Image 1: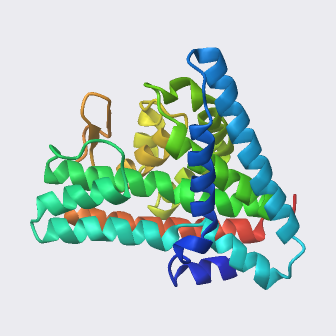
Image 2: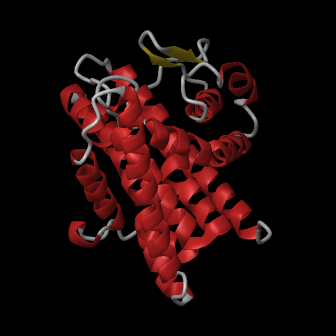
Length: 285
């Protein structure tokens, strides 16, 4: 696990040999096979595509589980995205610091969020980047580490396939509403524990400053997991996170800015250290 985190500092493997790219290619192929026109067949096709992909990923992880520790560490690394996440958030912050709002919007949309960013203010861009940092700190770093600690490479690989399927298929409307539903629910279930643990470590890292905000606001989002993370960061940083017409977290906080993005990155680093320490001392399951 520590080797994977150390290797992560070197960046991502080349695209042709990146396991998550392979997963994305499989999911794109599976989607092209769908023929369902009504909710029932669409749900079944999406469920089958997810189950086959998760099974293949777990099988590959099981085959690699016989490798020595250094081989497993090297294979676990591509299932994490710590450096990529922190770098993406820092790039948005750098653009805002240069007062280049169009570039900050572009970077936010390219790296971190799927929403339309073209009309976001500088404060909203900073807030969206912090939200993505909080959520992906769990989804892309803590969750795969916890999966590895509990179930080795098979569970870590199946988790990453599921999380990637949710990102590609897990939409609440349009043609993916039913086809992506099983993958989205599986991702919700797999992230129940890591999201809450990551939120807890963020609150501990802040000295407990965000407890009240987390307690009152973590249910305000439609996701069963994201609200825990975003409200913990909102409270810890004393900032207002506002997605227009959807939710407001910590309404009494100040509007986020560039300085808060830097503080959020510091909080994320401390949170991750606490999470890794907890995973290292966790008894074997």
